[in-house]
Length: 140
Image (cartoon, rainbow, N blue to C red; front, side, top):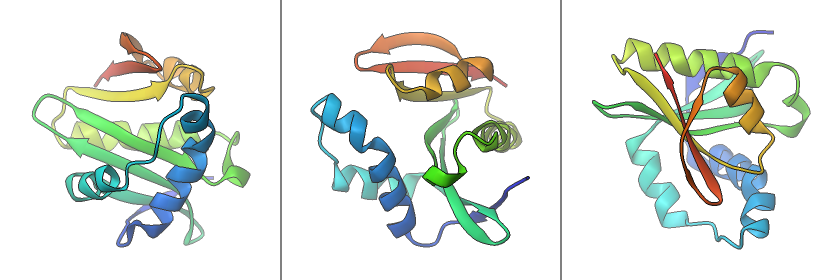
């Protein structure tokens, strides 16, 4: 199973998927969704839908700077989780960041998110903690 990428033309699918995936962490850490922040990031990021058989199954959002590529979001629909697609999406993100000439791929993740293990197994190292978040990066 190898997903393809397509430029996301509407933020609706991404917003719904991200909010759904982040809701337990936002509740647990008493955070609120920032719609203006999401809208602003939508204009700065390369927003990609992950597709299987032309059906959207996830979202991958990257922001590029001269210093690094930032993985802003990687979310899969619940029925597609735990099938190795997160690992595959990370490989795609690394490829895109490398093609853009970025030396690092960085991300932030809630410390209590099981995805921390996915990122560590993919070669991401802890740079610093900003509770409740961890800042991770991988050299490209």
